[in-house]
Length: 145
Image (tube, rainbow, N blue to C red):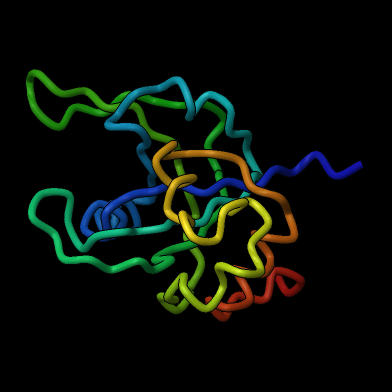
């Protein structure tokens, strides 16, 4: 049995890039609850509906992919009043990829007309086959890793 799990995190592209630069991910506006479900070695792909959280332009791309490396969530201080929870991630080189050509083939998207609905959950688990399909579209060969 494969104990690895595969996750999708919905994050604006500007926040994804900050995470890539710092080697971390946050989820659900810095809350820890969903991050606790991730385990070291799990895979994570990022979907960005917009270029930035505030006033961002529509993007609808998969923007990054990585592997969870830390054992547990940790808290960071971004300001005296904001201490978001994070997980360490080793990001893989990949190509940003539009979601639209993949929608019909992704099993976690049940209603293809309302395809954006699942992403409202923020961070959620996806089937291995869907993750591999996305990784391949992003130019990542998981077998070589």
